[in-house]
Image (cartoon, rainbow, N blue to C red):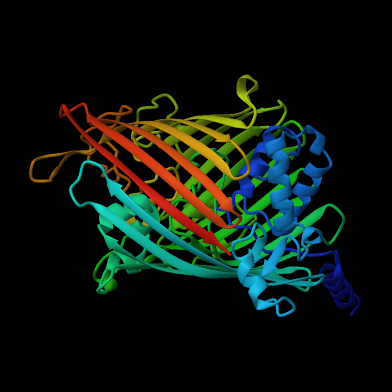
Length: 560
C-alpha cells in the first residue's frame, strides 16, 4: 500500500507542478518569428533555440523574446521593430485594445471592429487570453497568380482559406486545430511548381471535380509539465509540420518538405540533455487504384547534448517500415538499428550525427552525417554500393562585412548513390513520392547560397542560388532501365552481380542552376504581399541538351 501511495503522490506532483501562465500550443514552423529567433541566436543575444527539433511552444517563444528584451541595447533599429512586433503577438501582457483587435469582441462597437480590419493592430477572429486558459482563433487566406514566361497559356490561379484554433487549457495542455481548403484554375502541373505541397495532396491528385481542388489540415494535443526545476517533459499526439536534425536549407534527416505526418512525440529536457522520440505514419506512393495505396511508419529517437555558449552535438536513430505497427519501434529507450536486425532485417534503418556551434558571435557552423543502413564493414571501399552515406556542411553569417540586417547562408550537401532507397520499395525513405530527407535525392550534391536582407520589419528580400549536380539512372529510348547508378530513390540496388562499385555522379549527368529572388512586403499588419521570380537552367551533359524554366508569381496572404 505504501508503494501505491508513493506512486500516487508522484503523479499528483507531476500534474500540479509549474502552475505558471501556461502557453503550450506550438507555433507553426511557417511563422517568421523563427527567422528572427535564429538571427538572435547567431548574434548570441540568446542561446540555442533547438534548431534540431524546432517546434517551439508559445511559452518557449515568449521566454526567448523576454530574454532578447533584456539585451535590447544590442539590437539594431530594425531588430527592435521586430522585437516589438513579436512581443505584441506572443507576450500576453503587451496586448491592449489599442494594439489588438478581435472581430467578435462584443465590448467594442461593430463599426470600430470593421475599421480595425485595415489598421496596424494585431488581429484575431476571436481571442481569450487569461491565466489558466487561452484561445486564439485566426483566419487566413491566399490568392496566388503565377505565369511561365516561355510557355504559351501556362498560368495558374490558386485561392484558398481556412481557420486555425489554438491555445492552452489547465496551464499544461496545448491544442491546435487547422483546416485549409482551396481550388485553382489553369495548369495543375504549374500550380504544383508554385506550391510543391500539391504534389502530395490527395484531392489535387485525384482531380475528380469540375474545379481542381486541394485541402490541408492538422491538429494536436500537447501536454507539458516540469516535475522539478529545470526539467521539462512533454507528450504530443497529432499532425503538424516537423523537422529533425540540424541544417539551414533542407536537412538530411527530416526536411519538413514531405507531407505532414500523424505522430506520437515525447520530449525530455534536463540540463544539457535533450531527448526526443517520435513515431509517425505517412502515405506510400499514390495510385489511382485505392486498393494499391498503403501507409508506412517512421520512428526516430534523438539524443542531443547542448553546451551553452559552445556547441550542440546529437545523434539520431530512424527507421521506416511499411507493415502493421510494431511494438519494437514504440520503445524510446532502445537503438532502432539493433531492433531492426532482431526483427529479421526487413526495414529501412538510418543513423545520423550532427553538430552546431554557438561560440562565435555572428557566425555559426553546422555539420551533419547520415548513414543509410550499415557501412562500417566496408570502409576500405567508399564507392561500394552499400556505402549509402550523405553529409552536409553549412555556415550562417549574420551582418557579414558589417552590413547590418543581412543574413548570408552557405551550405554544401552530398548524398551518395542509393541513399534513402530500400530493397522493399515500400520502405523507401519517402511519403507519397517526396523524400523525407533532403530532396535532391541520391547520387547528387548541392551548393546552396542564400542571402536575406531586412530593410525593415515590413519589407525584406531573399536571394537564393542553388547549384545541383545529379547522376541519374540511364534509360533507353523505350524507357527501359539499362544502367542503375543509384540515382532514383524508388530503384534500389538489385543485388545482380554486375558491378559492386558505384562512383559518385556516375550515370546520366545533369547540372542544374536555380536562381530565385523573393520580395515580401507587409503594408498593413496581417496583409502580406510576396513577389517571387525563379529561373532554372538544366544542362544534360551526357546528352548535350539544355532546357530551362522561367516563372514568377504574386501572392497575397491575409492573416486575421
